[in-house]
Image (cartoon, rainbow, N blue to C red; front, side, top):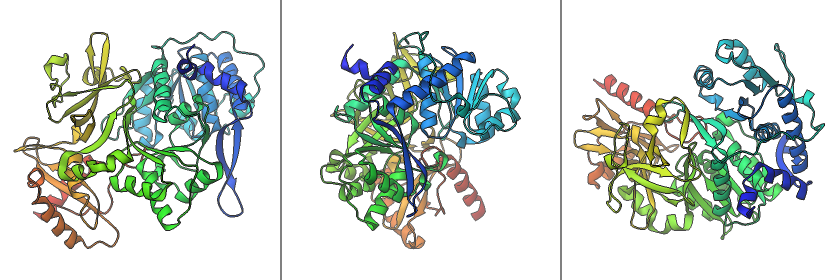
Length: 553
């Protein structure tokens, strides 16, 4: 077995537990100290391994076997990782979803999965009971916390010590389904994504490669999947206090405390965490000598945030802007030094946002912009070397090749190329002469004017540098093909709206690509996505802009 393959298997996790049993696996908040900062506890690799074995025993006795689809609605915690590893060890398929999308939407999505097992916190089980018809296939339950008015074991009753070794597990094949994860639905209908054991193996290797294949150390984790990858790499995973549906409310003081207290070497976070962190470090200068790398994901991180982090962190720290999705994580990354070496200025001139080169073993192509299914490459592929904006389409060992639900998503979102399957990201961009990807915006959010299409991120980067402007969002008002471009504006606190709008109009006159924009309505606070609190809800803003126009008539 090669070194790479060793890291990429569930058995590799068990070997880690045997090789360094006392090493902390998950460090998690538990109460508060006298100074108001979180107190922490930890669970070792050996404890986590044995706990997951005990859970796997209980689930096996309850009829959960290889392939059993199992809904998991548990907050980020040691319990979550013990449950996930238990399911992976017996070959069951965890089904994960963001409950922040709303109860009825969540239930509608989970109904389609036809799960046979359900593991969740009490509030999740209450939903299962209240919407019993949607979960009629569920035969096995496990409650994480107190059981209310339903039957079944609790996680506490299972205990943390296995009575025997699991001997009937069947080694997974690379194309076996490992997990079903739902997209948030923040930029389109939520879809159930199938990720295989091969996908996970590739993700682990790509994360390891992105960090320079350095020895795993300590990671601060704000996304559960990243925690799984880090645990398979032998990292000590620190979970700061946060609410998954309100990531933007995370206290940056707690993040700084966790980094400093546990010597965090690397962290992954969305801009909703990184921006307040930067503001805090500017207001409360403190050295974070252990922090060597920061990875951003979930939404494009503003270039000023990247530049600011470089100023407040140690000189040799690396700050990466990442690009990925539920279907393909990661797709590309770019380090701050390259980004700040002239590429930001190009973005401000309307070229889009550079998101770097494709990740290890990931290939990117461009398709001509269309909302229709594409049966063959020749139907819509943009030739290599032609500078044109198209839909980014990716393939690689970490890229999901299939949606579990709805079936029509496979027709719309996948392209067969012999035995290879390409994933249509729904994102627009172009590829420069050295292979870097420039992100221009979501395909579904492009504005189709009478003079041609306009792309959100490409346009917004021109205006986000205007004094007094916090951020902007391009939307279209009217029917497709004859839409009027409107730039919604969120101001910095205390900014003069009249002066800001004057500066925005002056800026628009400097660039032909944005000259058609003449309306700059001020919005009190943009709606954002649930998972990362960073993706702007442009569809909602478009409805708001249309109402603003109607009110002025």
